[in-house]
Amino acid sequence: MAKSKEEKLININYTAFQFIYWMMNSAIYSFAAVFLLYSKFNNRQIGWVLATANFISIFLQPFLSQQIIGKLHRSIKSVVIVLTLLTILTMIPVIIFRHNHVVIFILYTLATLINLTLQPLVNSLGFAYSEKGISINFGISRGTGSLSYAITSYTLGYLLASFTPNALPVVMIVLALLFLLPLSLLPTVNEAENSLENKESKESYSLKSIYKKYPFVLTIFLGISFLFIFHTIISTSITQILKQYGGDSKNVGLALLIAGLCELPAMFGFTWLMKFKPASYWLNVSIIFFVVRSVIVLFATNIIVIECSQFLQAVSFALFIPASSYMMNQILDKKDNVLGQTVITAGMTCGGIISNIIGGYLLDLFGVFALMSFATVCALIGAILVFVSVRMTSKLDGAKTFLH
Image (cartoon, rainbow, N blue to C red; front, side, top):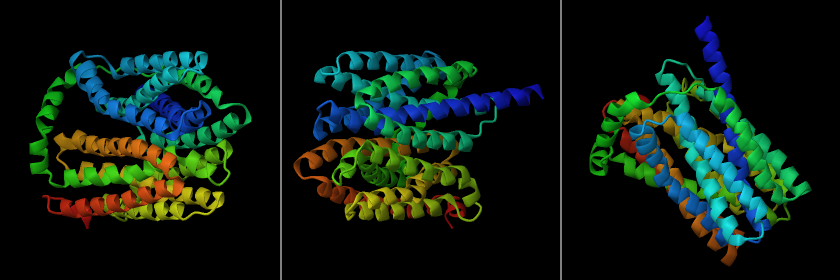
């Protein structure tokens, strides 16, 4: 009974941990354009801030995992604490030097980088508890993360519109401090004994051997990259898209609220959906709606259509996340499961980098229609590539069980 109560307490704290992380993600990432436009940045500069953060995170995430946590045997919890304190330290100068473009560019990029780097660590901490025999309900914890993202987006939209976007760094400091509270209540997990697993992971990470063993990996990586060029454009340029039709921070907050809430059914109920069809089926459903959503936004004529298109988050992004993760885990060998999640994350990050760089230039030079035309083409290419990669997986031993 004591153990059951301990597990329950850990689940509560871990859920709160996820809840506050996604509040921070909403503030620093989704409202980056609102804050930086108010700080006199143009769209290209905003694109470079987000692209730089995404690009560096590709290298920082494995460095922290392999060198700091793996070789130096630092716990995930201690690394998260350090990164959270760094977030606070980066936001303080942004408040003080709010008219200095160079300071804001460097420090806001760093704060965004830290937030992106925290994401896999937040998830990994849950896996670490599971490996120790502590049952963590990922569906509920990640689902509450989507809920908090939605609530924060809506609330922050009204807050920044009613007061000033300069309040964003203050909000980030408050959220970072709150983030440390459930983290401090979670037990520390020692990662030292996983060194053998780390060696095995390194062996399976030879690009040549990966492609030979799983030919579909390159195709699905490219497909995810193209899909997430579109998805990142919708997520980070929603401010500029709505502004074209007279929208403000309130409209941005409502759009993000709709998208966040629509994620909940798929996040909470995906295991139920898999009773009827396999993960690969739902992955194909999700990519169809990525394309449908892109076309609707491309030809939208007013704010209402844009806001309504956000409801398609429920059958695009919200389905894609669990479907892609489950499919990878089912098809790849157990020792290569980390590889599967890495391919998904790398594809998303690559798409984010490309969209932030090219998107900023398209917005400044040609406008929203050109941006969404580019995004729609990318969504279509990505959907085709992911569909092809799913068909390719049927050739792997044992995969047909999951694909038909």
